Amino acid sequence: MFRHWMRHTAMVPKGFLRFYVLKLLSEKPMSGSEVMQEIENMSRGNWKPSPGSIYPLMAWLQERGYVEETPTAEKGIKRYALTEHGKKFLEESAQGKEEIQRRFRFIGPPFFPGAPPFEFLCGELDSECMSKLRDSAKGLMIELWKLRKHLHENYSEDAANRTKAALEEVTRKIGGINKGFEK
Image (cartoon, rainbow, N blue to C red):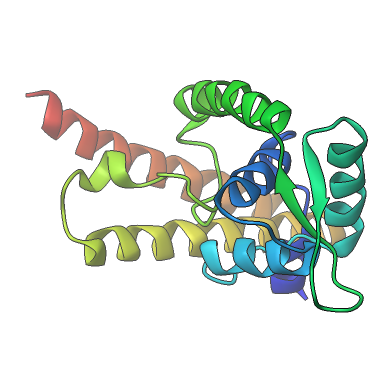
């Protein structure tokens, strides 16, 4: 159930879905289902936008002249391509996305498509390092969400105190790693 929620949640900052749809359509004409599949592939299966978010967004983009329907030989398939107006909008959106990533790069989910969440930890290291860090951070996020649910349903002082102690320990350990770099 949690995996389903993670795949369809609104954890993605406002405007990011629009940005990725525009980016994908700038590469080639695509249908809504192709866009959903590509975003799922980019996120390694961790996030798949729902039809209820993609199709209204496609209509919104078309109404504003950012995309246009392209002719297709396949019956029942609507593919969209970026217009010149859409290309300008994408450039403006890219600048905003870069600013958001710069300011909040440590907060975003580790599986967000195209986001560089752990490059700041691994630098030019191999992808195995980044994969391990990503998996660890994802595991931590999942456990924190489960814990939030459990504490909400069955709150106890003991559980709250143990949670506080565990979070303080993790903070202290990561702080110790940071101090090692500062020497």
